[in-house]
Length: 545
Image (cartoon, rainbow, N blue to C red; front, side, top):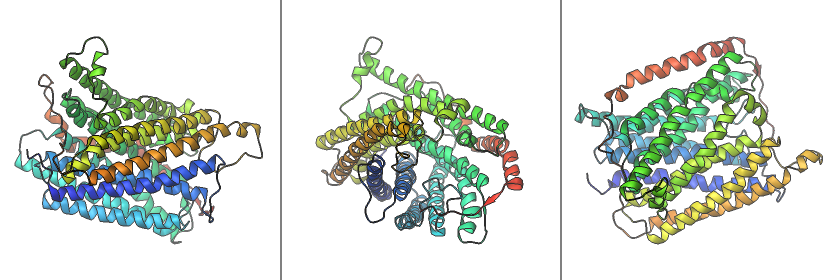
């Protein structure tokens, strides 16, 4: 395989990454200001609203940064492993998707900055935004669909030229990720097109709130796995190469991705456990399905640590944990994603609490939930994406990751972990004391209970400032990588251990997995949705800003 990344494909990948970093920076500014306002440290000038910042922070970081980065990374993966360059159709669809998503992001951001769409990133009805905000969401989703078609086109082309061969693991994972995304976004597309846009234009007077929230969470929970699966791709395939080891098992990796495809979608009701209008039976069923997702997570943890231990022992380590010393701690390409993996242990445990009916009642709608979100997405996923960017940018631009940039990357990772310790730790703590999420600065008329939350809010502001400093260091490194000396940087793709079990062909029978996924979704959602559509009540819109 040619060690140089195709330059045309490199431009497509780089455009996605730079757009993602731009959204991250703007969203980070909003996040830091938001944490300072909530602690009572500052008041916002020029009539800027707290909830306006909250909306911008959520949309730009949770939706825009992640989607652009993921699609750029997936395109790099299929370009690298499926023939060394994209076909014309795949590359064309990649650019069409990029421009549609870019147009949607710009339109949506303008609406938020004009205070016409202060509805938070979940845009829960009956909060009502400008119709152009919902049109922006359509552009973002449709653009991502077209980008997904490009990934599928590249995969299909490779299969035609390599009949009977097993596809490369990294490409297989990219296809599963985009397939899950296509199925999951049907829910948000339905509610935006059929409910929000007619309602926001005034073509209908009311909106079925329960139905809209259900369709959102049909999409909202697998959205978490759309973030996590590219991180898993890095952990499974990229990290073994960086540490000088091999992938423990190709079959286990593919099994975990197929299980994520099947069980990440029909589980949205565990986000609506406190929602009236949904039968306890359907909530219980989806909670059970939610816990099925634990299986691929544990498979992943086992496989990764097996890779680490085998790699360390091959280098001569002894003792139970001697292999830990053999890991390349001073290489940011490993260090940043590994810290993300480490944080995923408490983050996953918190997820089990959120999904459990009784324990959810304790933490529901408190800052605990926000703290959990910051551990999973803003730490595990974000740190892994930062680690990917440190080698992907020089790989696609024909430049090198210098020792200086590597050191700055280590500093940035440490700062991010420290900031998130303050931010997420205090959110978890105050959430357990009943502190509600999504609220502006208030002492609730100097209520003693609310005053006791204030030290936690101050700690959040400290964390927000440290995270913003880390973000500035990240941007400095990105600029530095674009200007670093020319040369070849490896696109690290791991190989499977020779002794690993053979991978069954069954994993690439796409018709079977799509059918199983559809059956699970129909079982979990058909009866509740019929009830909501025939018996739901409508609400007029409210503009609270």
